[in-house]
Amino acid sequence: MNYAKSFIVASNKKVKLKGVDPSFTDDQDDHKSAVEKIEHYNQRLRQLQDLLYAEKQRSLLICLQAMDTGGKDGTIKHVLGSMNPQGCRVVNFKEPSAEELANDFLWRIHKETPRKGEVVVFNRSHYEDVLIARVHNLVPKSIWQERYDQINAFEKELSQNNVHILKFYLHISKAEQLKRFEARLDDPNKQWKISDADYKERGYWKDYMSAYEDVFSRCSTEEAPWFIIPANHKWYRDLAISQIVVEYLERLNMIIPLPSVDLKRIRKEYHTAKKG
Image 1 (cartoon, helix red, strand yellow):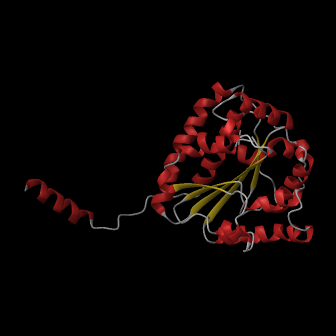
Image 2 (tube, rainbow, N blue to C red; image 1 turned 45 degrees about the vertical axis):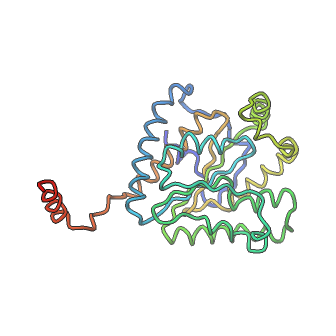
């Protein structure tokens, strides 16, 4: 199955999340049947990231968005974590600081975009300013309504400067979210993730779904497409995202750069030193 074609949001397409099954797994039966494919893509991803780092002609920005417990951390660990940390960086955008609030909403985002040869993963992103800011009325509608076009222009500018952008929404059901909250309560290793806001935010579920639908409908572009990934099954989420990232990087036709030094001279010096 070609996950990119199946889960990409076409430009200017009106999206309704009710029509997307978060438990979808196509022809994959279970995690065991997907393990070999996931490992294959992870190995290939390591190779492609090495090429990106060596070539230093372009960069990759991956944006992860989801409701709480949607699997952003798991995606980073199990898929994107296969990359070499030397050329990969994860940025987690939390509540903005006083300095960040004193600037435009994209100021803190632009500072964290990837350098040439680098992969940067946004754990949450600039889209929070048309999601939580909208749902909780943190800014007037007249302000957040303008931000869709500003975001599109920002991403287009990045693309024109060889920053390739992939955006993933990890789509889970409300029932699955509750199961994951309950699992955290019972797991001492995950209890630190629990906050007072977790269950309160569930009361805004419909509002968030509407906000996400507008994001997908207005901000999935050729330069920066959105992918809606069924994520009730973590293994399927990992399989789909790993395939999409690998196939996208392969289309860049990256090559190892030529040496910048005289290899014949260096070999001669090496053999001379070895004899001495």
